[in-house]
Structure formats: C-alpha cells, structure tokens
Image 1 (cartoon, rainbow, N blue to C red):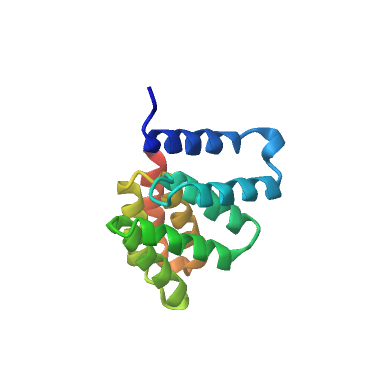
Image 2: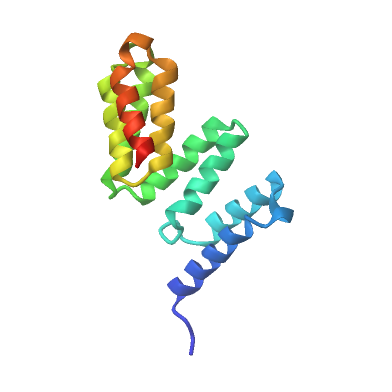
Length: 152
C-alpha cells in the first residue's frame, strides 16, 4: 500500500528534525543546509512550526537577524491564519519601537499571553528582559508576576 504524500513528507520532516540532534550534525553548515533543503523539498504548509522556529533560532544564534526576519515573514505568510503569531509580532514590534518608553503593564501582559499559550520559556525570557531593562522603580509588578510564574 502506498502512503499518502502528506504522511511521507511529515515523516521526512520529523526524521530530519530529529537528525539535527545528532552530535555529528551540529556544525552550522550542515544544519543550515538541511533546513534549507527541507524548505525547498516540502511545501511550506507541511513544515511543522518547530522546524520554522529551529531555522529562525539558528539564524539568530549566528546573529543573522535580517535572515531570521525573512524566515519569520515566510512563516507568517504560510501560517497567517494563526492570530497568536500576529499578537506576538505586535508585542515584539512595540517593544522594539517604544524601547525607552515601555510601561511594565504592557510587558507583563505580553508575558502573561505567552504563559497562556504554554510558551513558558518565552514568558521567562520576557520577565527577565523586563527586570533588566526597566527602571528599578517600575519592576515591582514585573517581579511579582515573575515569581508567580517560576512557582508554577
């Protein structure tokens, strides 16, 4: 019996993603080559979101911010129906644009949104960012929520 094409491509993507964890494939060139190959081989809608995120994280690790943004924009074009992605973009662009004028309540709301999405590591990073970048007189609310988050 011949397996449906979607099953084959999804299995290929999953197995290729798992191979990234192999120690002998941790060199940047091989990882990038594999991710680019998967992006060309498989239709974008088949690629699971964790593969997109792996590719974005890879680009960020090597300080290729423009390339990471391009991959993120491709991801958004494919998954434009997911409102959570648009909320993340709005928050991240607000943080980037209003960097010096940020209010703690906006940043806490962003972290709480990430917690509700079960993105606990992202929420932790947002709280830490807030504590490091906000003036100390504005961090009481952030610290209260951060402590509650860490106790969960």
